[in-house]
Length: 308
Image (cartoon, rainbow, N blue to C red; front, top):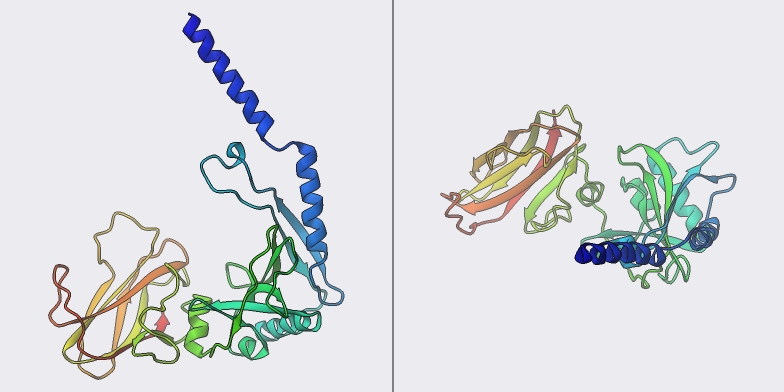
């Protein structure tokens, strides 16, 4: 009985400590005011306004964060434009021009390098997303990081700011050659022809530059078409599937291409639950198997052609 009372008292004490350690309403209200003040200083085109603001207080102690890391507060808002430019590329150029006029730059990222998203990048098809930095690469403010996105997750034009109440280290902006294939990798969408993987480099792409775990693709897609060119001593393995589908044998949606030295067009079937697909390219010396995968002998290029 006494042990049960002690356990009950301990639980009550822990709950009281949890309440005491969590932030109170007044502290959260002050934090929100500070974050909103930072967002109010975000650069805007003439006549534009921030709408549909969303605040996330983050967490910074054990009771709020549980077993995860501390998270800074975040504020997100959409940008409303009365009469926006007609095309995605012109909209992108409009925003990067506005940022430059106000003393900022839009820093994109490719292959672990930061570069300035400019009008030329917009014209090449860059999605118009990145971190808003000052001309010297410093954070948007001494207290916050500001990110801009022109498109939403569906690829629809929907200008958006995300402010994280934590500054970033100064960024060094590099010169990056934005080829058609590089832009396709940055966009992560299977909606145009581009070099998917190559060795040595082809159109700015090498074998280690396939970005992220999945690519955006129309959900009705049942087949992906590729063009494979590789040394006749090798073979190429192409794998494509929906990363959310489990319970399938490994390698479904796989095509093994016997290289001839000439370009070979290959269709890889896919079964999608949603609008994304995982694509993997591997080139081995022939013959290869799951147990034996000898190093490739020659150069190769794999191009994505179309989805159907």
